Length: 177
Ligand SMILES: Cc1cc2nc3c(=O)[nH]c(=O)nc-3n(C[C@H](O)[C@H](O)[C@H](O)COP(=O)(O)O)c2cc1C
Image (cartoon, rainbow, N blue to C red):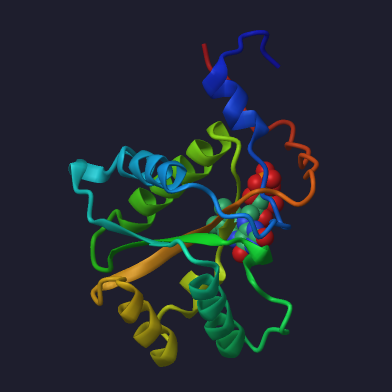
């Protein structure tokens, strides 16, 4: 534990994976700020081979959730926790740092959202299903580049409930002097 604190450290510690969203949409300005933060993540060699597909319409988010449900045989209740907005982070499939760069961008999205008082959750199932033919057709329709792999997606919105922090593991740090 440290006594040092500032607004960035505060945001890092306050971010939670939210699993219940209200229907209320975030503002366009908030979405733009979050996307911009994604673009400021570090990339190997400064490559920036990513693409951010923002679904800013609850019906479109619902359409994608239905396609994921279909691929994974999930129940009707599966809906990205009711989030009205979802950002799909994809990256040039063959680039050696695709997963690292894409994940760094996702963390930026999560932290930027938290800094604006917007709840978020990393959603894995779009990545899992992105190469299934029906999913790929829909992703292409939505603007995900055809030579990209989906690294992950981020559900965004206003939380319907407060999420308790998960305790952090002890003993995972050592400092060598
Ligand atoms: C690679 C990755 C994939 C994840 N996929 C999901 C997911 O599909 N659904 C979900 O509810 N949470 C998902 N999460 C969120 C984790 O479950 C969450 O970060 C973890 O439980 C710790 O909680 P916290 O984020 O509130 O600290 C994912 C996180 C990561 C890093």
